[in-house]
Image (cartoon, rainbow, N blue to C red):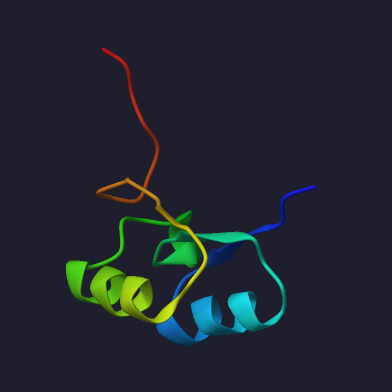
Amino acid sequence: MILEICANSYQSAMNAQKAGAHRIELCTELSVGGITPSFGLLKKVMAALTIPVHVLIRPRSGNFHVF
């Protein structure tokens, strides 16, 4: 089984790796369902972790509407 942890900061990503996660999903603003992290956070996390980093791509909070 693969353990993927949703991390919303540099520290939570480091904690996930130390706790044995196989990979992380990086995002920010979990209180609104998660949005795409900044490029700076992504660079910092990817430079520090040895496990794969998947990035949530969601440019804004809120619902999605199909017209």
